[in-house]
Image 1 (cartoon, rainbow, N blue to C red):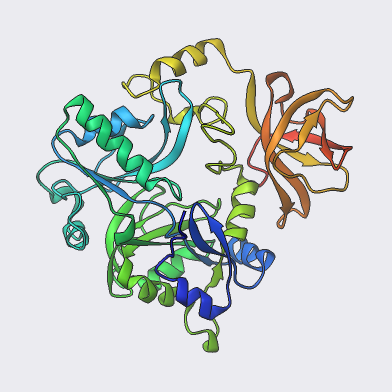
Image 2 (cartoon, helix red, strand yellow; image 1 turned 30 degrees about the vertical axis):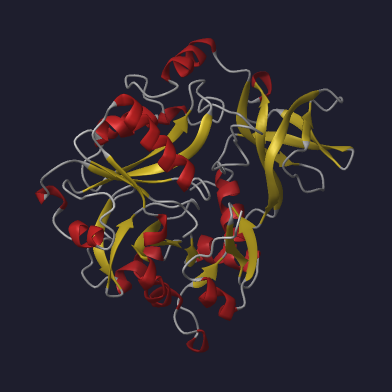
Length: 393
């Protein structure tokens, strides 16, 4: 796959960022150091370029039906300006991806490009017309999910417009206990700092019409800002500032994003679940709260059976009690060489200064405090089970 470049790639390159391939995108993995960037988010404020995330717009008379058939949560619970976390599952209930779904103002037309932001810049309750949504697949999944939505729409004979708008949007995440102050300074109207978690609104950020949500992937207070691709640098600069004058917020890469989300026990698509390499259902992945069985989504019947029968393995955290660093793929044992599961993620926690990991263990080993071992380079290292998050946030 040809590497895709975020709109801020040259800006990051000039700042001296180190890059990595992620989901087919060349993204900054760190600017200064992972620990420094991680600490900035936990203690102050950091800014991430997350333009590798997809954006798919769905609108039309049957948009609500289409969204409810292909995501596990219930979008009928959303008013304009609300959002929700959901899984996208196949017929067997196995997760293809996880996503955040935003309800846009009624009447917004998918695929309207730059006009979309102008449509959003109004009272959310004053819209008229057909329902409209924007959902965010993970990196590299935008094409796949656009095709899935389009194919299902056509097979079911639904009246909805589906557009892959990933190249139209830049996306930044402003995260940390000081994020509200930073966003308030960049948003003179003060319109977004009063948002509750998972609420969103249209607002001018550094003079750029944007869609701003109080969401994030770090466990801290934060905002995610979607703006036109060609204006991403203006919005980024409003938070990071001129390096010669000292940045107002720490620029952060995907390395810190990973350590932050691991401390919270948040799933990483393609690593903590994958339909081919790590096929898992929402109940196994401990996100059963996003499954609404009173809706007719793809995979519903399989998940209803699993809820009744229970799961054999479940997603948990582990904390090493011996020296070592856990990594994805490491076996977890009962301490006597009997395998009881495996890890999918692992790191040295910058906040706790402890080695932590995430993975799937047999159900009888998933109680908090259960003693297990992680096999690190052939040695069983003592560990204990932790129900995520590792941090109290």
